[in-house]
Image 1 (cartoon, rainbow, N blue to C red):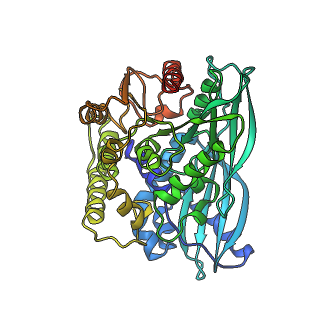
Image 2 (cartoon, helix red, strand yellow):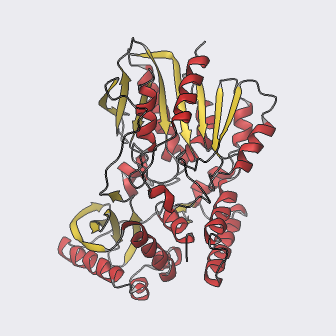
Length: 439
């Protein structure tokens, strides 16, 4: 299955699941039994306990690939540390904290009232190795305060990193990529958003980062008609409004910095607020997200120079699902590729190039040349299409991957779990560009 497994688990992170009903004792026993079956690799047996909908979304072979990817990343399974059971509507969900050799993983298991497994939600793993701060961050030059964003149902905890320089400060809101990311966009021991926050704050720029709604609220956030508006945009607007009201922030110098999906959405976000001075796009694609997903799958499957028959079947199935979405054969509430149809239909109707052409704000487009998720080809398309826009600045970095961390050779998903930091050159370029854009 090679590296295509990792793409599968990334898609599963989006999974929309129903939530469950039964008494806590039964749910606890069933949750433990599910984990035991995973560890014993009884995937066919597990699939028999799925609802029909979930069986279609995650057949036994897909679950096998997910589990193999987890073991590859976290090492040997040790034990269940804790199980918490919560109720949602007429359903219940078991959140199982599992301990592995190199970290912990929360697996949310959903049961229906007939005690069938109706959904799975794998959260980002937490690694036992510790984060190493970048050398370019001077921790004596800034402070961090805990904040809460929003005043309605979807309040989110965050951190505001403030320089110890003269007020008011220019400020940046960090916008996550795909998946239920934490405030640091943690992957393995790497924390790109923490690097950005500490690096920019060391250079006199305030930074606001926060837990992503799908991370903090889990399945509860996947409401009817779910789109990137609910996943990303509403909370970014709330974050911008929060900064706009802070006396230590310069109201005329608020920027948004989006990574990956966040970079793709940055122009759309900027169109929705007049409080943003400029946008920074790190590995933001110009292409349709549904065009990128199968290309990533093929790349990962071909890393050993051979695509197996099983991998090819998975790729073909992926391409068929994408074609169903594009041809409007998918209902808005139908779960496909780990998200409801409404999510994909919304993205199909979004053209980042059209949005960016409508903007006169300063725009900074950054790209690593070892990025296999958003490639140099995307970057070149941005350059070609926007060559007559004087407000847009471009830079391509040699040796940087999708996380803007340096590496060598072909980029892989596994390298994201090797300790590293966002390149200092990227930090310096962003800080200098922000200062120039203030003039």
